[in-house]
Figure 1 (tube, rainbow, N blue to C red):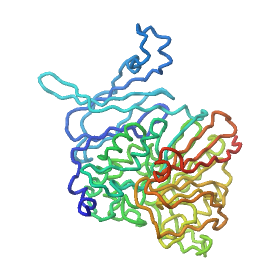
Figure 2: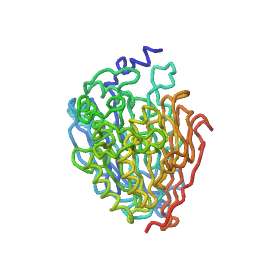
Figure 3: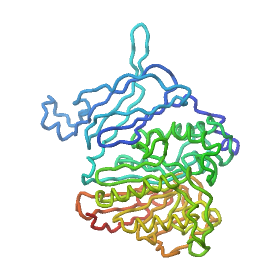
Figure 4: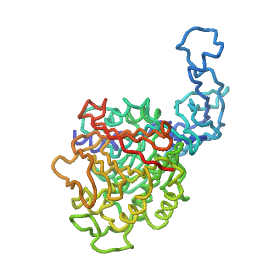
Length: 475
């Protein structure tokens, strides 16, 4: 059992893995992530999925209401392109352009095999719906969480699965996207295999090879930020090795399918879904060593501008984003791989979360307290907390999607340093959140509902806890 759990990435490196999934989908484009190690040119074909209701106005010559309505729109080709190469572990990210907003599409990936007569082989298909036009009222339902380890808790099986993704599948038909907030792989748990790029690639292949990963990720676009375990535990050494190897593998599998970065070569980004705005921080690459916070309050004992988690360039870009979306987006989400709350207060979190950077944290909260309907989303701690921060903004920190919890270790202080703890939950190897955002019903006052799911309660079929935030007038 121990050998299987620890050495599975070495025993079954998934060299023949095939991946075809949607990444970031905007109102007029879609990024598609491919892994195809078998060679041969590839072709993307796509079509609009005509709504069933519109068939009532078409002469189909049939009274069968179960007709495959996808066949009622023509196929288009996005062109032929060469296969991914070994240099990128046979991965590539390509884009479909000039799509229509708020429209569902079916996309097929074909391999063109050159024989005496060129043959086309269907490799896989995905469906997605483009987002509404920017600034338009919208309804959005998306999942959040972090931290996964295949086959935890351990079950004897030749094919390992990710049980949190299996639970998410129960809700996948209604999800527009999933925001995954780090620790998609554990490069150093239970054993660090090494600093080479292949050591990291092997772990990504193990995750993508899981049955529930394949089923979930072809149905729902998943966007990513990375955290420490994509590199090494509590990483704060910026671009020192093995950062380069780790980021090469991360970009090949998770980074490039994300929205375009805010700055060329960076991993932080922002995007919109109608009039709902997102900003995803990079909390690892630019961070310096932590400050020493006051043990009781989480505030800095002395002000020190040299301690930073975001770095100056990212922070200034984020501040400009706050200015831009303040009165142009009804709801705003800030994605952080580590919690903003100072509630987690053991030695590890006092250094690794925003609690360890109280000066910069206070600077940011001082800005976001003036931004209506801004929420923080985070993961990392293998526990769940909903907290009203000193700024009045609410943070939903949710993890693990599929990993261990800390049954005896951990130290969450409620109502610390001007915070108000709305809800806290430690147990559960599977925990994730689903947010429902409605800016259509009342365009001036949005509705934001967070639902916590855990397989410990209702087997993950129904929420374990629901919270409806009070939307504020934002224009």
